Image (tube, rainbow over all chains, first blue to last red; front, side, top):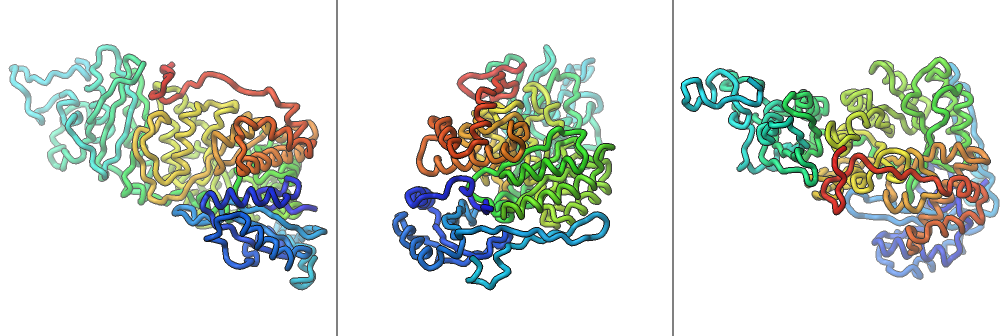
Length: 139
Length: 491
């Protein structure tokens, strides 16, 4: 399967040039670009690990790409990596865009566990197959 | 004697005093005050007034001020037991409507103490309670309202708001995608859930009950909720993405609505939906319930066109949008411009600004008569729905922006290769368009080419473009702002 979180998961995987263009868009908007990675892609896993701090002061996409490459070198085969643009302006103060830039080679996906509840109700749990293994050894 | 033809003279020819018994022109009773400067704390309303032939527009407008505040048809001495000068609404300006002989814009200021805090029912009962049937008027329309910050602050506002909705759904940087399940009547719970599953798995964020899906013989509400949540959870596991379906909890009584809402929450739904026809009080109750239960509240504006569509009479949708932001819904259908339902581009931009901005400056071209501060009240997500398809993605994005739900019902379910393919076509078209826009391309000019390129690696999109490429709904709008280069006169 292919996890479809983020803004561009239905497009073919982005090339570095394409990523750079999106990063520059964020920077031009005044947003801080943040790199995060995880090996637990559960849809409710909000807090992916941060690759250093959000880049509040980086004004050139090339700087972000250097950090992204360093992150890839450390984690690429085993994790999802996403980039996000953070807008600190009043009334938003949250993420403005978020997209996946790296995936593990295999994405085994999720199992849906059903527990019989009262009446005809089912109690659902979604679990990534990968999290059966310890963190760091999942993909 | 006609009610508007009231003599200000007593029988003996002497000018009457203000409180002598009998009828008196509204303009002489304090409801017309051309020198009045509205206070920052006043609520202001702008009405489009079409008086009967021979009726003076200023007297007609003063009558509206009177009848929507303290007056009745005759002088009453009991006014003198109150601070009546403060409580009288004051019509302070009457302007002819451009290019519409016989119609006038009347501006009326209302003292804040006339209104119960935090109650749309009270506000609307005052402002539109009985003046719309007033005999001396041919027609009357409430065009716009200005609410002081002090009054805005008495409302909860949207239960969730755009920012928290996006955070909860983990969806940023693009419009959300939805579809209304079709056929809207007749599907069993099991078949209905199939449509939901296919659409969500294919790439939509939301599916939606239609306004009249409640609890009918072919599908009782619990069946629908159970099968829909099976579909939502299955699609969530299949995609790794948060999914939702607007479970319509509209019902005959509040007790029934709470029961349905509670079952939706128990089943883990992220969103419930109500229809505008349940009434303002029920809407505010559900908004409070949703805030308390971490639930997004979708409002379907069922019935609004009966009073919003004709320019001459009724209530403008921009007023309804303001009331609904105060009342506390998270989603509101606000027009598509390009789809099958009424929606002039400029007026629609005005509605979207009301939903999404913290401050609306006066913008007559977009139909906004007043500056409006929203005092950090949550933002409300507009929904574009009705006769739109993937081939219009560039126009939709350009006109309506990013914080909006695009709802492609027929444009998903009517896809030749099935529902999931229809959903994928819409999602690919959307992501390709956002990607192109962010990369600096002129999407309005290059839109069709961007879609064709994306279709090269996405057969469902190619099929969607081929199926609907020439479909558009180009009819003249009946409701347009009056202050534009080319003005549409009232019908």
